[in-house]
Image (tube, rainbow, N blue to C red; front, side, top):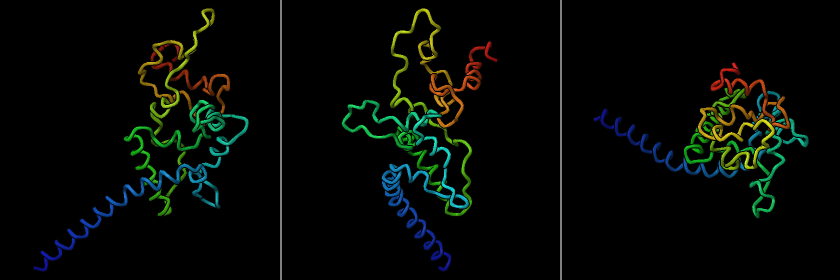
Length: 207
């Protein structure tokens, strides 16, 4: 009898945990959706000596003179048309929030994991993105590229070649490294030395 009672108690706790998860999951999703609209929330955690998370990245994003591609986005408006009734400033979450339901879910999962490690005192600021942005995160704004006719007397730019606008197996962020300094402002802040390495996947002459 005692063993049966113990098993019954464990089942009760498991059932309670399942109910709390079912209730807390959607609530946490909605609450986090609300608070992450503020860029200050995204960088509000502190590591050591009150140093805010992603301090340098946030500084670059807010810069009045863009030195990285992120700053170009920070100075832009969403949606891209200034005439749109709901135009507003770009926020961190506009790029990093995920686009599809699956994309949103993976962002929430990563945020939940980071929250756990932060609360337990074992969080370290990442040096790179564990889950890089998907192309769909860029394509929601950049749905087409190089719409104007190329100059017939000049070498075509990358996206002016139709073959470069199909699935190449190279993600947008593999060339357009949004938060990395040192790129060419006249070429969307891409870094030639890095991009040549991506080109070498198809073009042996770049190896």
